[in-house]
Image (cartoon, rainbow, N blue to C red; front, top):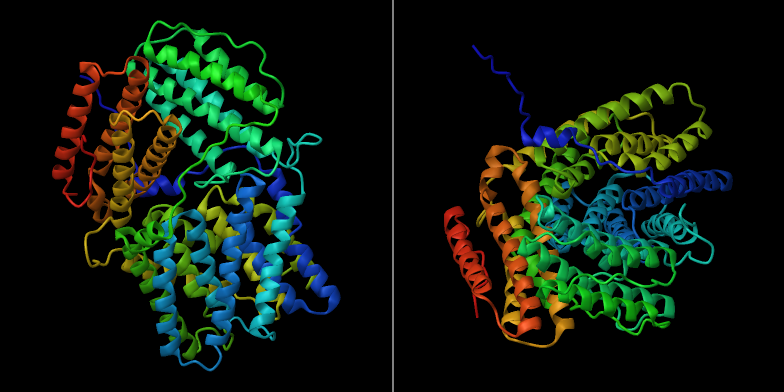
Length: 620
């Protein structure tokens, strides 16, 4: 008799809590972290203004949380915009907390949370800005510093600016002489050509779909590296124009490779040699040399050959004449995002969490929970981080935050008992700052490191050790966010998923309409194709996150992955249609039938999962 082996399947939310990002240690970010908050505190201590150093170190710490891998240009926006929002929040919180009744302050925090949460739906930078606005508001209202509001704000901004200046000035480990400005941009563009080659190698095999998704991710990263969704119309130097031209030359290659993957026919190994050589030329800043031509036996192969010839010409131009223009997000589109389903739902949850935690904290503060010290701001600040969906599923966030806080508080209590003050605490701040870039790979580890850093800053500022109240505040914040996260909201649930699907559906519709219209504007077509795949990638990420929630929340987005998968196949088919129309001027029955089948399947999927409000593409 056969014996079945029992297999243990972890719930998705718990499996997510155990998952950590992998990759090489970001040594340059570690160096920046070590040179940020700690030295600022040291300079302030030598000058006799430790409290100013605390505010500056807070600015550097929050900027360090946003200091992720990427280009220098992208870091200006990724670090600078949240820092400005945090400065405004510190001003608002400081002046609102002076003599304001707890009821009025709670109402103000609730309204601020509603606005910041809704704006966070725009994207990662807006989300970081909303978070810093709320966290700094709570700190400004509750942290007992002797400086006035504008002095605190200037110190906070100076700390963030110090870290940003380190990001712009210090070279990365792989930077070569004379290549400081665009080292990360070149690596990002080179990765696109490598991804094209990987997709060509996988064509006809089981990994083709995954390779196509990897190509989309590489194109997204390169697009962000060169300026984001609105690439500048005129680059500032010939080197920058050259990079833009090299990125633009990759788009027809990506289109041809996607069409070959859609056909399902394997191609020879020779087809990927050209993109490999192009990747090396971008990475090393050299000429491409002769590129091996692939076979021209099929429309997609002829498109690949033509794209290689176009890329060779673009690489040989000394000034990089080609440039890519993408559609900028208009103010009207941003407003629609903020007021859409995702912005409304997230805004309401942030408002309830931030307002309720502020009310509870002030009630506990009035009852003597904090032993006479105004640490109540930790509770709403913790709730702001916990409510962020981009940090993982709700239950996973709660588990990681609680575990990380307990570990960090116990570790700090042990270190604070033996370290000299303030010198030992300043060293601890510097070490913690250096560990943040590594700890961001896991929310619990990041929480533990930040807890040690914040507790060190509090003690340097003159307050007694607050490890145990920090643990209590975190557990209270976890309970508040769990309750609010499961409350019914006006309208339909899974607003973030629905919003992303609406955007992806609209982008797919624009792309399909352009291709079927017979337009010869290929540059516009490549831009529309990019926007469609990028919107789909963002929708996929949101759907995967929603699927890992507790069953009571995950059920609201059930089936949305079917819609996203069908949309991806539709965009792939549209790409194949575009390449075939370029070659012959007409579509085959396989193309037209494929479009019809996918559009019908999209309509059925929308009805089956109950997302009738999500607009899907139709054939024009």
